[in-house]
Length: 455
Image 1: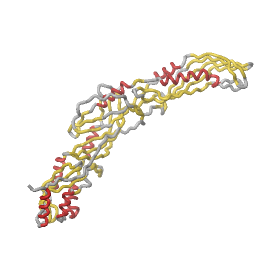
Image 2: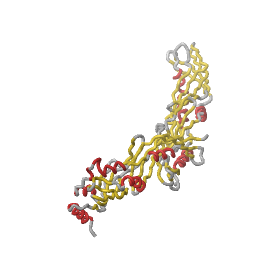
Image 3: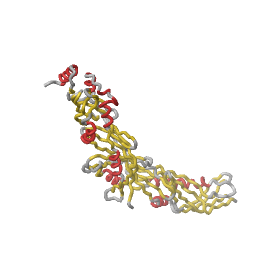
Image 4: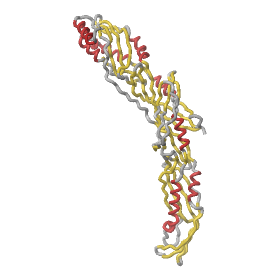
């Protein structure tokens, strides 16, 4: 049996003797291509309004219903003065703002001051506590008011004919109440962990669907809980909470569901982004692609009479992550020619095509072509190499649109009242990976998604 080296020498000898050379079935050396496809991370938000009445009760319970007392005070220009007050707690006012929550709670009533001949009285004097808080999610999944800030504002200054610093007079009363209100706000917890944990369980479950008539699987891979900046306008506070996900649509049926790993819930705060992205992978089998190419190549002649080759067979295969075309020819050169290149998605005239822009002859083929002085690659319009490159073009627009439509839907989340509503309206081409027997076309579908409730 001849070794490869002897076969190569035999081919070279035949070429030098003027006989049609035969290219042996070399092992083609193609540089490896490493493609790592990572799904884009998106956020699925649920929007809901937060009732303010429970918080109103917390605010009012933080202040006593009645504050009264009196005592002697030293005032500039007046000296010693008798100061008395009887204040009643006012209804709390809550208002949603674009950056959180604003709250007001007053203690108003009769305030009197007596110093010698000076007598003054305010029927609705007192102070108002103004607080602001930023709703946030804790590591345990509870909604809290982070970093509450409380300020004191005097109301209805006394008119005694001389300036009276009502704020300073009321400071000993208001300051402890302001501190207590701040502590009460810091203790506010709305336990969302059970609801959010269940939502993560539902999002963790893979979802079967049909793509191009074949089974496919949507895996959301939920990660951290997220909270968008909470705000509103007026009486309604809007909460936007959800999960960080990395959606991936893969070919084949979903694997059996696995329990979600339990660990401390990670929470992060991010701006509300309407963008939702799903990575999809479509399979183009090499046999199917070759079958579409053969009618336009097999039986075709390239070159002039006496100096031409006829394509007798075509096979496509993977070579180190690139697409390899094996072309059987006979004529001026008989044997198998190898061409390889990096498949990619090309956007042209509103359509998406899988092509091989850098298709070129493998070193083994090019070496032999050079040795036998075959002019095939210098023919008009680039010869066989250029013609094959032009014909290696596969329109995948319809398949990508089918995936986009399949993912534009509403997904019920178990037996809860929630469902995931997704709308995808844009296609962003990604990598094309060559694997043994198949090309994997990766693309990113872009749109928006939201968790909605039927209640």
